[in-house]
Amino acid sequence: MAFFVVFRYLPMIGNVIAFRRYVPGGSLFGEKWVGLRYFRMFMGDPEFWHVFTNTLILGAVTLLFTFPLPIVLALLLNEVRSAKLKRFVQSVSYLPHFLSIVVVAGLITQLLSVNGAVNQGLRAVGHTPIPFLQQPEWFRTIYVSSEVWQGLGWGTILYLAALTTIDHQLYEQARIDGANRWRQTWHVTLPGIRPTMVTLLILNIGTFMAVGFEKILLLYNPLTYPTADVIPTYLYRVGVVSGSFSYGAAIGLFESVIGLILVVAANRISRRAVGSGLW
Image 1 (cartoon, one colour):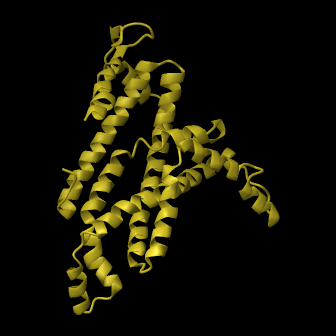
Image 2 (cartoon, rainbow, N blue to C red):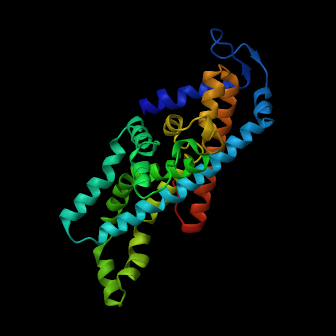
C-alpha cells in the first residue's frame, strides 16, 4: 500500500502541469494556466502520430506472442511425467526473467552486432553479414523475440500454479466418457485456468501502450526510429531531454487515459464473453 501511494498515486498530482506552463526551477505545479495547449500541440504533430502507430503495432505484436506462449508451455509441461525433466525445463525457461534489462540489451547487442555470433554464423555458411541493429525492419523481430525469451518461463509459473487447482476427478470422468488427452485439455484444463488467463490478459492489455521503455531505449538508435520509436521513448526525448516537461506530461496523461480505457473495455468484454473479469 505504501509503495502504491508514494510511487503511483501521489505522482498523479504532477499531471496538473499538462494544463499549466511549467518552468524548471519555478513553481512545482506550473506558472500559468494554458488549458489544452499542449494537447493540441501533440495532436497536430505528425511525428507523434507516427510514434503512436509504432506503439500500437509493437504492443499488439508483443501481446500476440507473449500472452499465449506461456499457456502453451504450461500445458506441455503439465503433460511431462518426468519430474526431473519438468523442473529442468522450468528452471531454464524462467531464469532469464531475473536478468536485468541492461544485461539483456548487452547480450542482444553482442550477439547481433556485425562481428557478433549470429553474423559469424552467417559468414560461415557464406552469407553476407546483416547489421540487425541498424536496420528498422529487424527491430520489432528482435524486441519481441527478446520479450518472449525473457518472460516465457515466468508467465508459465502462474499457469502451472493454476493447473494444480483443477480437480483430478474431472480428468477421470472425462476418461470414462472416452475423452483423449486433447479433449481433456480442451474441456477440462483450459476452462480450469480460464480465470487466470482472463486476469493476465486484462493486465497485459493495461500495459499495452507502455511497452518496454528501458529495453527499447537501450537498443534503438536514430537509424531504427521509423519502427522502434514509441510513445515512452518519444516522451523521454521531448519531455526530459529537451526540458519540455509540460508537453511531456500531456503526452503521458494521454497515454495513461488510453491504457485505462483499454483495461475497462477488456474487463467489460471479458465479463460479457466468459462471465468473469478482473473486477
